[in-house]
Image (cartoon, rainbow, N blue to C red; front, side, top):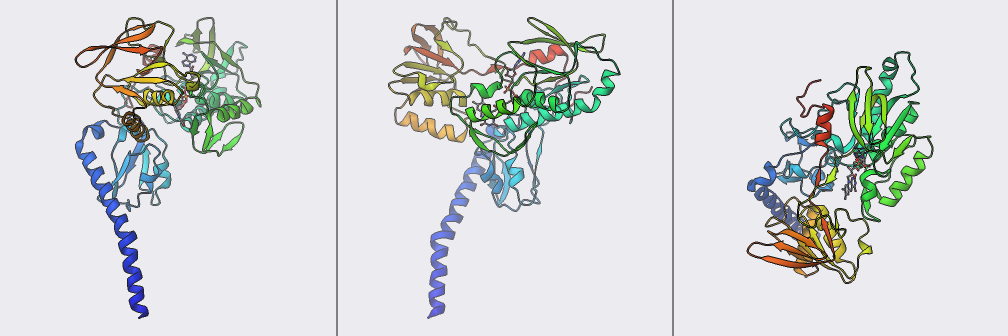
Length: 438
Ligand SMILES: Cc1cc2nc3c(=O)[nH]c(=O)nc-3n(C[C@H](O)[C@H](O)[C@H](O)COP(=O)(O)OP(=O)(O)OC[C@H]3O[C@@H](n4cnc5c(N)ncnc54)[C@H](O)[C@@H]3O)c2cc1C
């Protein structure tokens, strides 16, 4: 009797828990296999750092798939971890950290994929001696990467600075000049103070970089990181304001020489073997330079009539400042979709999103699901295959598939990406691609 009862319990567990779990996994795997077979997403290869999986070691536990905050970079296919959307990897490295058998290593993209990225050595040095590149400018996104690279580049500088000074001490010459005060530049500046280097940081806008421009109260996801002049920073989720306040607190511990309102125009090594760094107002001289100016560059313009009008904007910080307005968003990336949904949430707004393609691609999973839901429930209108042709006060003329439409628009936001600082790097003489030699 007891044995029969045990068999019934085991059967029930199998029927109600194990079989549905197995079926769900099979469905997920079939979906992943189909997505991989569709091809184009997969052929859109990794841009910078991305996981490499040693299939022989993989035990198919799925820890890497679950760990990835970007959604569907990885999937289990035939019981093994496999790369599904390499281009969505932005270098969190959590898959590698979570893999219990060490089957995943993070590697850099191939030379062909990196042709638009500057050459950087393991010490973060560019193809020009003593000129370093840290943070997103080098191709790796994320705050933790920017902090690590800013810190490590200055460690490399500290190890060679005595030789560069060569006994001379010119009051006007800096040991290190850092361009940009985002996470990479802040970390580099703090590390320079820790090493007692004579340093200056030039920032064209505000201290904090891209983080300052995040929407108010945005939740920032990060990873534990060793922060100069502080030690291990362990928080993994905090608001933008909390993160900026933390940086400010640590920066107060050192007498940092950060000058805002200084936009660097040129960097050249002159006959005195020093870098001459020119801004609109000054020329600075330094033994070494760390370029930490990110890749946001300048927002790309559409070249459409009326684009210079004051209601046409390129950056949204405080969505809740806009209520009871007709709003047009132009773009189809994560920034455009997030702005559209944020503005649609505000009272009385009527939001239209115009995208030049026929469907969204390359959206984060979370955003793709949310925008679908917003469209289905009429919270905002999306006009695919459309392009603005003229902005004027209160309205925009839009070319759609087969007609022109007038869209009421008190405010317009354009999210057409940015012009990356590639031209600047080329003017400095920095080589591109991983095959570049010094
Ligand atoms: C909307 C959004 C949300 C994000 N969320 C997260 C997140 O949750 N977690 C995460 O880890 N990452 C996130 N990121 C990515 C992260 O913000 C970046 O990877 C990081 O800020 C890069 O740091 P950086 O110091 O290299 O460059 P930036 O932060 O871009 O800083 C570069 C600085 O250089 C200055 N500069 C540029 N050119 C010049 C010049 N010629 N002269 C002087 N100064 C110059 C700029 O003004 C800027 O202050 C997000 C990015 C965006 C856009």
